[in-house]
Image (tube, rainbow, N blue to C red; front, side, top):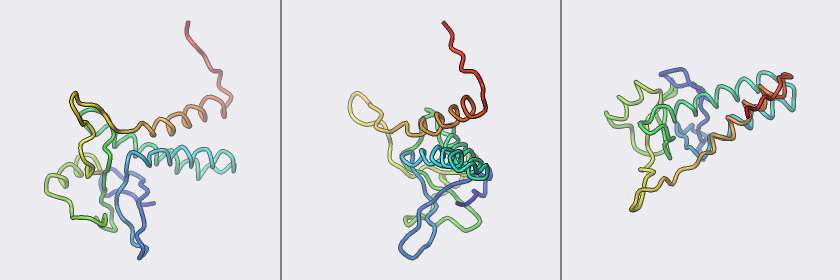
Length: 147
């Protein structure tokens, strides 16, 4: 885990074979916050839950930072440890986006075909669901439905 240099977002990156942190993520990994939350609840460990909440917030930020509010297929981030992603260095446009949002988009367009269709995933919903579950059931709140 590492914090971004802009926004102080808590991110999980990848490790390469030399154990070097790759500063990159994907919408497909946005379920990880929910896993940490659920694991922390099962272990009764608030520190792990808090990490999960922070990871989920960072993934929410990647969705909120796009014009469509749909998370990018791939993104990268900059931390005090650098910009290494295993690929090319960020462009000036990506650096400017990072300065505003705390991450930059690396993945290809997620609207393809004719007519345009979204090929992304909503795995972040899993983390949202874990947050809702925690807030609703773990703290004794009543679940209220409207008719």
